[in-house]
Structures are given as C-alpha cells and as structure tokens.
Length: 247
Image (cartoon, rainbow, N blue to C red):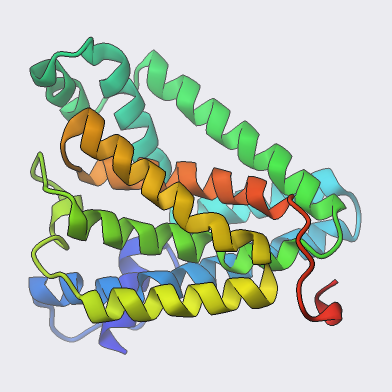
C-alpha cells in the first residue's frame, strides 16, 4: 500500500495518509501503481460527467474537465506548455531547447498549447456525454496515459535532470507487463476502441526518440496530455462493448 499512497501523492491532489518515513527509492518503486491511480482519476471524471449529464452535455463536459484539472493539479498540462515553448523557440538548436525548457515563464507557444488542449478535451468530453455507452472508457483513459509514462521513462534515455528521470533507473518489466495485460483486458470489456490506445503511446515515444533522442519530465507530462486527448477521440469510435449493461 505504501507504493500506492506515494503514487497518489505524486500524481494527484487527493488526500492520503501520511507516511512515517520516506526513501527516494520508494517513489521509483511506486511507478507500478501509476495506472491504478489513473483508474481512480478516471472514476472521478466519470462521476462528474454522469452528474453533469443529468442537466446538459456541455455541463457534463465542464464538470469532468474541472475535476480532471483539480484532481491532478494540472501536473501534466504544465509539462505540455513547457515542451511547446521549448520546441517552438528552439529553432533546431538543442542548447536553446534546454534553455527555454528550464525557463519558468509561460510563452506564447505554451499558452496556445494549453488553450488547444483544454478546448479539445472539453469538446471531446461533451461528445462523449452525448453518446451512450462511451463514458465507461473514461475509467481507463488516465490509466493508459500514466502507464505510457512509465514505459517511456523506462525505454528512453534521460536527456536532462528532473522528476521524469527518477523512475528510469528502476525498470520494473514484470509490473509493466502486468499493467499492460490488465489494461488490455479492461479495455476489451469496457471500451474496445481503447485496444488501439498503445498506438498513441508508441507514436509519442517514436517522436521523442526521433526529435529529441530521449525524454525529460516535461516530455512525459506532455505525452500524457496528448495521449489522453487521442484516447478521448478513440472513445467516439463506436465499438460495441460485450456487455449490454454498459450502455
């Protein structure tokens, strides 16, 4: 349970019991619980969406988006904005890329990326609220994205010091395989369209490998956001779930 508590503390703003002691290696080991934390986040999103759907799809989308940001504290949105600024200002200069990435100020590319990400999620959540049988996939969208982050950090070299690298030294292949199998089974049950979710994770990994040659913490956060948007889009592809009660 210690690993789960640390994962919840790292990835969300949810209240958790305080641990009496802490060792840095515990945080690295907690990465195997990231998809489970994603399911918790997804459950809160689903509850907010269902509540808002009693009135209007747009209200449902707004409540779900607000819950998403409040529960996570905008952790991954920050990474998306930082990476957008760095890529936009680098002009193929690696030194300039890292200089902008370290700059705490938000630039025009970062603002634009945040606006586009928030609008995309709001519209997609509204469409999901209007389409019967697709909302159950919200349980798994954050789980898949956080599982991807663990895989990226384990399979890509760190190119800058930061929080994203603290997991790379401990490659829990068994844990990653177990999480992948669980997500595939749950996707087949709840939202078959998400069986294509690994393609989004592979695409982002390929981009990081080809464009940057590795990853940073901001790269992981940006990937989580972009993959979540891609998976929300996948949910709109109507693939019948095997159990009618899900509709």
